[in-house]
Length: 144
Image 1: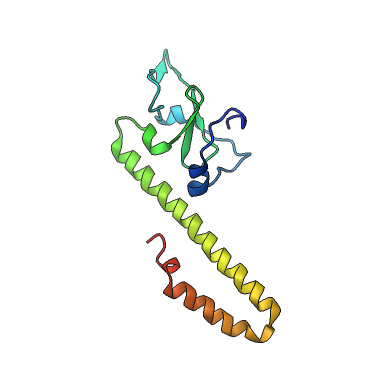
Image 2: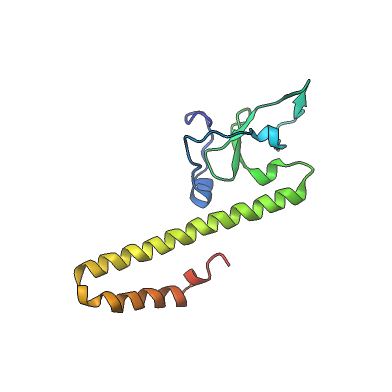
């Protein structure tokens, strides 16, 4: 994982994709999986050794280049493999939407619990309101 003070900052990546879990050991580095910095010009391998300028970014679905200090969506780091890049792009967008959908459900559940905590007699009615809110809003269709 890159040093926190040395990496680029991308608030959009953090908001849309979330932060990668810390304390995880990755078996393969991005260069070993065929990823290449889309900005830097360099051979991926020299004398059997990989150029290890790329690291897994602190943001989900991103790769960080320590040379140009930029976080790139991993789908952009697959030169010559457009099909795999498109698949990775679709997968990472779907995962981000799932996290957002889960967050909306958590907000509705928290709202429900706050309301139920005040008046026990309203609990069943409020559950119906929550169901109606989810069924009739864009929340139910979000990510489909």
